[in-house]
Amino acid sequence: MRRRAILEAAKEVFLEKGFEASRMEDIAERCELGKGTIYFYFRSKEELYLALLQEGVNELFERIEKKLEEEGEPEEVLKRVGEEFWNFYEDNKAFFRLFVFGRRKVSFIPEEVLQSNVERGRKYLQRFSNLLKKGIEEGSFKKDDPWRLAVLCWAIMIGALFLYDDDIHRGMIRLESRELKEAVLEFCLRGLKG
Image (cartoon, rainbow, N blue to C red; front, side):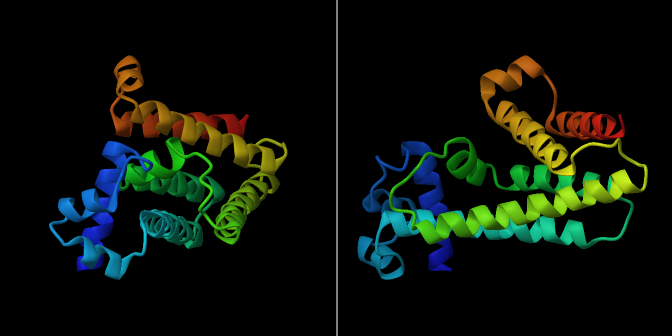
C-alpha cells in the first residue's frame, strides 16, 4: 500500500514539476510519508521513474495481448486493439504524458531496459502486421506491405492521442475522446480496405 502511494505521488510530482526539478522530498510530502520511508522502497527518483515506466509498459502490453488473443475476423480484432490502446490512454494519461509525449532520452535508463521495451513493442507491432497480412490474404484489406500498414495505423493513433492530449489542439479539433477514437479507427479501416 505504501509502495503504491509512493508511485502515485511520484507520478503527480513528475507531471507537475518535471523529472529534473522533482525531489524525493516533494514525493514524500505529497504522499505524507517520511523521506526515509520513501528511500526504504526506492533508492532514488530514477528508480521511481523506472518503476513507473515498467508498470505502464507492462499494463499496456497485457491489455493489448488480451485483445490480440480474442477470436474474430482481422477487422474486428484490429478495432478491438485500437479501442484498447485508446482506452489505456484514457485510463493512464500520466503514463503517456511522462513516457510517450514528454519522453526524452534519459541517461539513467539501463540499455537492457530500453532494448527490452523496444523489442516488446516491435513484437506487438509484428503481431499487428501479421493480423493485417491475414486480412490481406483473406481479401478484407487491400494488397500492401502489412508492416508498413501497421506502422502507419500506429502513427495515426499516437498522433491523434498527442493532439487530443494537448489543451490547445483539443480545442481546435472540437471532438470528444470517443468521437476522435471512432474517427481514427474508421479512417484506418477505410484506408486498409482501399
